[in-house]
Image 1 (cartoon, rainbow, N blue to C red):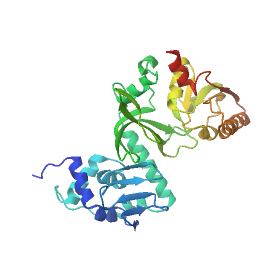
Image 2 (tube, rainbow, N blue to C red; image 1 turned 180 degrees about the vertical axis):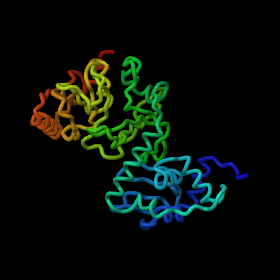
Image 3 (cartoon, helix red, strand yellow; image 1 turned 90 degrees about the vertical axis):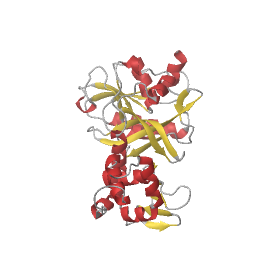
Image 4 (cartoon, rainbow, N blue to C red; image 1 turned 135 degrees about the vertical axis):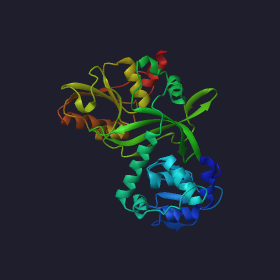
Length: 336
């Protein structure tokens, strides 16, 4: 009977063979000092020596992990169970013949742009599928509660939000808990996954103390996080004629608006710049842009582009700003 090894053990054994593993999984990569680099701009790098041996990071996708995660992403679209079974055989500690890496699989992380985009989408899908659909009792729910957002007050949890207990963060050099959100396009297709890394400080859950605690994997442009359907209860694609939509920049702002106006359809655009690109169906008659109180020239110009774009589509456009703080979440917390 094969000896028992857990995922951590297997990841360490794979890391010890990082050079061979990287070359077999990604034969079209190139050696760059202590790293094996893949992609048209070398965006995916794998550490081959040193204290961080076996760790990898995709700079375009903003994702990474250990050597076992690499096997999962390259060969099995993020399926860790499949990766463990394959790795046991490759390491010679499992039943069955040593597996060969299929050229078709290795090509999924090849150098051209299309393959890079496919890899980012696969990462986004894997992160979403492996996250917990129920936020209740998780650090993500505690984080939102700390921002004045009690999910129980909504009556139901937005399906676009999930919780992941351990997502790789390159800046932290470790896996951290995170709130994740699905970004979808106008047709409802999942195109990206947004992450908010979390940390426990002084007994409370907050955004992790990082320079960039929020990042997205995949194609965000033109998509949105669908926070709330409003009184119609219909999907964005099936919105009734003349429906109104509120577009906020961030998730917390969007949820704060839902608490105050649950009858409205609310989306999170992820960023102000993406408000201009966000695709809406013809049925949406009124667009309310819930803008942050950013008085900088770039923010003012970006907001005006969004106003002009939706107005050019024949929609009624309004801009709403919080009278307190920088956004509507500040208003919510001030009212408590």
